[in-house]
Each structure stands twice: as structure tokens, then as C-alpha cells.
Length: 245
Image 1 (cartoon, helix red, strand yellow):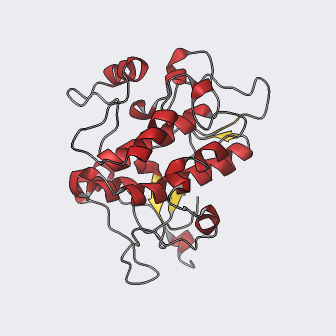
Image 2 (tube, one colour):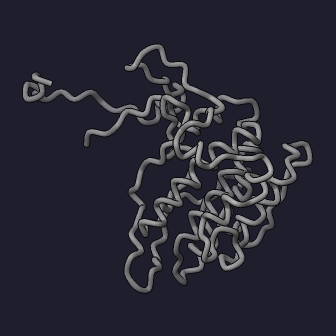
């Protein structure tokens, strides 16, 4: 597949290189807004994404987010407009994924809540940080309430939004009503700061970080300790067929 080059690296990498692995609230608002807007479009097209995480969010040369990897994406355009597949990343699982009764776009909205929390506090709220056990993580998602570090970001309005996005009952979750993600866009976290959705959608809003690229062909190098896990062996076959490229 020949795809567009997105040279700014992953949001995962940006977070990993920051102190405590987090960004200021206004930065998180910009990146969260990009994802919410992307999900608004996907859901209008009857697509549920199901794999939100910082590794699947690339930063383009203007500093905007690109959502990638639609391997778990699925059309919900036929009755009963729900799916049962158990998939995704455990730390980002919504409770309804594990309940086995079917789910819809609500899992993406839950994922936005997890992402905003991770961007602001540097870790996900339900992960088993002691053993890294995904089964414990899933138990915590089902049973534990969202808690916040006492020495973390004091953004009260952001906490209100996260609490509303991480309602375990999807019928009470912000963004899961008839208004869909438009409900999230109207939340106080965005409206109180005069967040301009039109400017975001037209890419006229200034991004909090723009990749330091020296040319049109430059890219942000991946972190060595991260990229080494995915090193690909060089292809040794005949490449004469592409010599004209």
C-alpha cells in the first residue's frame, strides 16, 4: 500500500519524551479535539474504530493528529447496528466490550476519555501498573472508579469531562446520546476556552507543537528503544521491477 507520509511521529513518542509523560491541558485539548473530530466523521459514516491509543495517532507536518490503523474498524450499517467482537487494547477497553452483550460507537467515546486522562496525567486510569496484567486491568475497568493524582494537573473542568466520558453505563456516557460526539464538543472544557472547532477543522488553529522538519523529506526519528522492537529485516530479493520509480 502506498500511503501519505505523516512525518511528525506518534503521539505516543511525543508523550514519552515529555516530563512525567504528559502535556498541559491546552495541548491535550487540541489533540483530543482532533480525535473527537475524526470520530465525528467516522461515526457519521457508520464506522466504529475500536483501537484508540497514542501509538495509533500520528502527527502531521502542521502538528495535527492523523488517526491510523483501521484494522479493527467496522461498519455498523446493518441491523442490529451493534457488534460483539472482543478486540482492541486492554487499557482502553470500554466496559461494554467485556460484557459480551454487544456495543456500538460508545467504545470510541470511552477511548477518548482514557486518552485525555493519559495525556494530562501520564498514564491510563485503570491499568495494572504493578504487574502489567491485562486481566487485572479489565477487572479494574469494570469495578474501579476513576481517581486522580493529588499532585497532578488541577484542571477541574477536564476532570468533569473525563468523568462524563468514563461512565461505565454507556447510556449515561457523554457522547452516546442522540447528539453523538457533538455533545462532547459542546462540553465546558471546550466552550469555556472558546475552542474554535471551525478553525480546527480547517487546520487554521495553531498546533501546540510542530515537528522540527528541515525539508519536505525530513521525518521525526522514532525513539531507538521503541523502534528496535519493530526492526524489519532488509529485503534481499530482486528489486529491478521498481528501478524506474
